[in-house]
Length: 272
Image 1 (cartoon, one colour):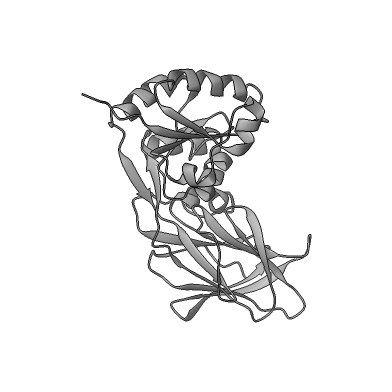
Image 2: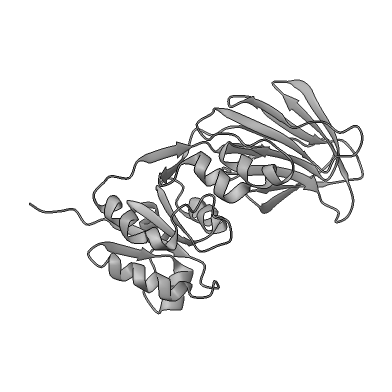
């Protein structure tokens, strides 16, 4: 009986000390599989890189680094399930610890790792669809050290008026990231909800909001002389002016992850 070889894409942060040695170790473990290397990693290893199309056709993506590496992988191949190995500081998206690599790959090969869906957020500015966000979309001041004023509409009704550094709209996954640092609630990823969290608001201080996942959210700068940036998963992508709107809604394309760790145990270990 022939056993199908897995096509495993590997994405890593080569600047992390010891990561290249760790990648070579994983390549040895996966020697019976088809390993595809992302361009930057392949260059560091002196190996041929996989094409972007090949990465998008992989059976699995293995990331080596931290949560930023997982977010990068999601942008490269948004429809491929991710198994994240944590060599970073916190590792909320990258769940597998270095000493758990062998059992994780054994389960991956055997098809015993559950694939779970995680909500993503779709954003549109001036009719242009931005890349979907796994964590969050942030609207913040375009002028360093200066505040911005933004209005938030939910379902067509005004829900928040923020004078401060901006506002975060986060998925359940993103509730554990920047939104949590800004004082937002931690949301179980199985809960269908979005969080809207003001960033360092001045008085009056609007509280964070939890809204249904299918809500239509609009964020609009309301100071004629103060522009804002729109960032998707930490990447500033577009500048908006007074009267322009960021339109946000649930994406039809959820992210896929291989489940490794219990959410609440992970939260206790990493967040408090």
